[in-house]
Length: 400
Image 1 (tube, rainbow, N blue to C red):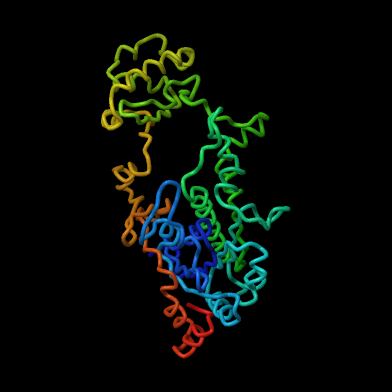
Image 2 (cartoon, rainbow, N blue to C red; image 1 turned 90 degrees about the horizontal axis):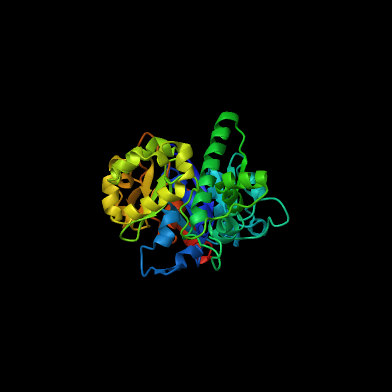
């Protein structure tokens, strides 16, 4: 049994952020009904070009990632008949999940008060770009703008002298923010179970971006200076040769993060076949290592450049200190640890990344994303509508 078995979620949302929250809830067992425009559907369905990647035909990962495991109904909320169906769905739902801006929520009659009129106990959850308060609360945005750029990440990771900013991968901030929203919804359901009170849940791309940069932001506010990325080619730590990046013979990198260099120095020396360095007085203590970091970095760079990433990965399998291969989005699919934990799973015809939460050491079941309006008739029948009424709604353009 999954944690949200029996929980019904009504999702009125588009693109990546809020639908990814619905995907997480579906991973956790909720029945998520995705409401899409009766004619055009979720605009995300038309996304074929992402950066240099182009997807032809279906399945389309741009749709599947944030919509797996849901059911879809095509609904025109602007028509009275369509709104009637929406409210009927809301009466039976535990959660109302939306990405619509305040003006559109009011226009379509789906704001908090509207939905609470038909279901006072529903958990109302909103995902926004910039938060529910302040002079810009009604503005829209995407993860590139609100999460990545405004939240501090872009400026903090872009090296000095770089022309422009380092850009995120697709839906980077959307997916993280969606997981935050799913967690908030789960907490709200727990509160409702304990107290009978159903809170309004708000998560924004901006707030999530700030949270992701929380440690660096706290340091900056305390010390009065912004976090700056190291220059291109810089090692990393200026006092620890075992905390930084090293280039391998085949152009990849190894990441060392051994915060106690004196503890791990000798082991590293043996693993790189330089045992004589383990007893070198320059590297005998944390203080002496800090004083000779530049020299140690030079030695490690020279040695690590003699073998490939695969060769070092095999050799460092027994290394006691924390390290990792710097992998790209294709290499992660071959990572035995990722596969052992089922962090990538099959959903229909595609392999998708599972949400990171597991219960009872079990991976979630990922269902494929629904075709546009694929479950319209099924959902309407669950509401008790007969075929005559369904045909009437279709003829009126209220449903697809």
